[in-house]
Amino acid sequence: MSRKLRVGVVFGGRSGEHEVSLVSATSVLNALDRSRYEVIPIGITTDGKWISSAVALPLLKEKAGVETQPERFLVPEPQRQALISADGGHPDTQTLDVVFPVLHGTYGEDGAIQGLLELADIPYVGAGVLGSALGMDKIVQKQLFERAKLPVAHYAWAGSMECVSSPGRVAARMEKILRYPMFVKPANTGSSVGITKAHNRRELIEGLTVASGFDRKVIIEQGVNNIREVECAVLGNDKPEVSVPGEIVPSNEFYDYDAKYVDGKSTAVIPAKLPKNVVRSLQRIAASAFTVLDCSGMARVDFFVSRGTHRITLNEINTIPGFTSISMYPKLWEASGLPYPALLDRLIQLALARHREKSVLQRTFRPGKDWYRQ
Image (cartoon, rainbow, N blue to C red):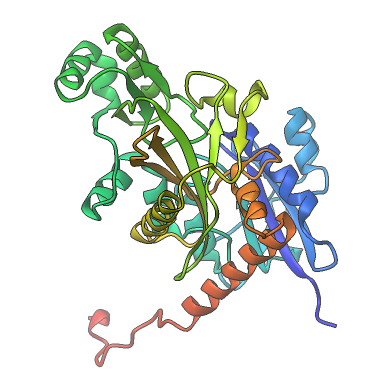
């Protein structure tokens, strides 16, 4: 019998979404089939320390005892493909066949860890460096969606330094471009961290200050009135499949951090009760958004659908969607006929397939003359 695949599940991280990652990782670790996989938990603390042990997840949840654990981390050497011990430099006895990053937000969803895994030549689940970076940056992704003629809300953006030094000037500029209500967001966060809704200039200035604390750029979006929040899950590499859509009914005025994770009062309607032609349009736009940003593996695409007219507005894409027990991505695929464990299997196989395709590409070039030695 062939040995089990060694799957490194990376969670935690230096991000405002650290706690969300821990809950997502709990679900992933519990659902991975131990008859097929040797699962290696890899936790990253909020200050960036890497630990790998059976107790990594509970220690990060308790925020205590981490200092007693040996530090192990990845190095960008393709010959190793293993965790390296910090106290001696010897390779861990368990190399990694594939990595499942369950890292939301900064350094996990923005291409940073994907770049490390590329250098280490380890297959990994989800989008590559480019797709991750584009999916994380709400401004650049909207610019690309516009170029592809996908329907996005009106928006503008400003640098965080200007938002802090001259918030009144930024607010006045936004009022000339957009109407209230406006949503103010850090350009590079998820899980609604740092997002506020502004109904007037005072709230807009407050929102600019909050968002500036999380990223060097701030995006301000035109609020869309009388809408339903609808999401689709995408799965695949070059030929993405799209799930049935689901509708979020938030417990707060909008689907903020508390409504997503804390109060437990938000509900989901899966599948969303929408006309068939609207469902087809949502699925088509979701697949296009996935392709436009050069995504692979997985993504959740979020929409606003106007009540009555069913007008579709593409909100954003998330390349490492939540995997908690209440997260939409796995629930949407379950409703589409793909249970959670089978979904994880598919994601791992997609990661391995993409790595095989890239492994045949030439990475070196031999010039006709050794001109570089001169």
